[in-house]
Length: 185
Image 1 (spheres, rainbow, N blue to C red):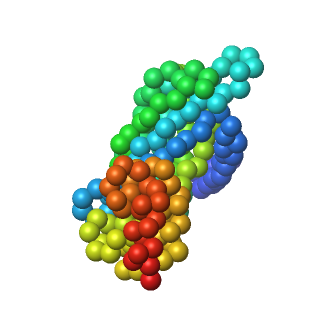
Image 2 (image 1 turned 60 degrees about the vertical axis):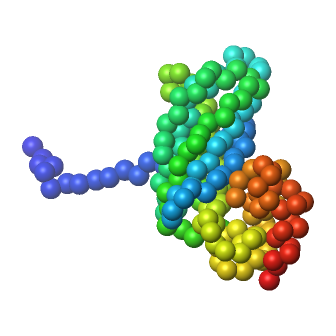
Image 3 (image 1 turned 30 degrees about the vertical axis):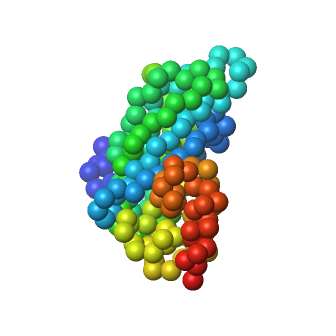
């Protein structure tokens, strides 16, 4: 009889996430007081094809993509049944990170059935908001200068609320762009 007590083996399992065409997402971020935390709200839209039996989403999973120094809470959200073309907002979702304002974090968002059967997964991009009180209006990433990085952050959040709403009127618009350009450089 052969002895296997000194034998060791491992198997690497790689899973390719399915291309996500069954959900769409809209994300709005907001800074929190203190260092290293921000929240976001996300609108989930069920785009399951109407052929056959439509997929009804019941759960959303949230995971920080590998290689990004952050945590997210909660990681599992129970949502109402989402028939085809229905949507729901979830949040606030808290992200903790030591990354500076303007840094990018990717999250993997999944939609699952009531029996936790996965429909698909999608990567979403979050931009870490500048810390409150950075001092200079328009310095969205907190690096001490109003420049193209801040402009990109403002434009990516156009029409939405959040830290890019420099005028505090509830939406990022031309008034916020004017405030940013007044402090350019």
